Length: 325
Image (cartoon, rainbow, N blue to C red; front, side, top):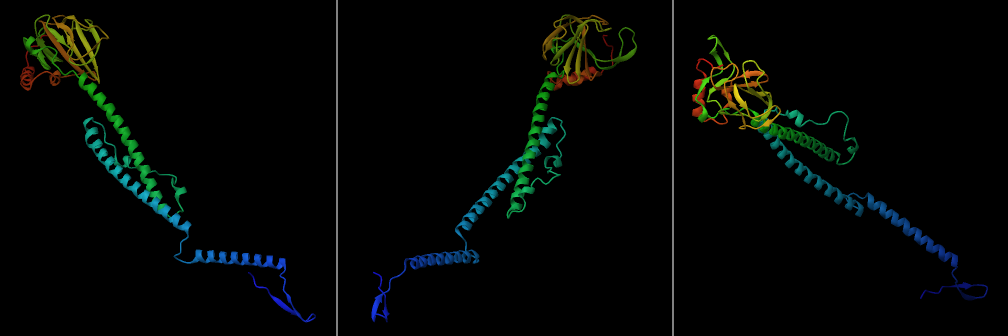
């Protein structure tokens, strides 16, 4: 209960009760509220300006910043691991895969090239942790580019591997007449005595003596581009295009087992030994071309001859005797 206050009235010679005015009481309330607000504002200003004192908002922002820095640190560790893996893959790519498939290695500067020209990270400048963010962004961009370069290289290696497999299947790599069917290896590649003129001339293939009708096999995968007797001296002959610049020729045949345009595989029966054309006796005259140049067939029998058989064949092919065509 509030105290009642009185004042002495000299006119009536008595004490009278003091009645507070309603407006003044309301003014006091407003004054109190204003004073409280002013002191509160002053307190906040003082609090914000005292060193070492953090507001809840500042604490929250610091926690968020610390979390972001931690996440960037984890990201950098993961990028470092990815860089190590990619470095190992690049080394194997240059020193193993590309060497095996006879492809030029990718230069280091091409694999790890940065990004020149305009400043790609200008919008990241001006912040407290700009260096951290820019460095991470640069590493991530370079890592992404390295992955693209490596991916393209592996695509190329895959293509080369497919071509290598096709090349190995296409190269004329077996003897066109089986050893058990041979009478003898009559003449090799090089200068020999012509059976008709007795003059010394260059013999462009190898002659395999065998009975008439002995099977003749394709020495590699390819397409028959000729099966006729229109070439001078060869008689009935077959020419196979193996791709990759290789062709093989089988001459003096008794008859064909293939026709022009037919796809064949290594070991397919393509014809039979004969003595057609410019020939002295039944035999197979066999030639190999690389980029339209005749080459020595002796280097292409690794597919079906043992080391001993090849050595014996090589010895006989080097003897300068009389050819059969």
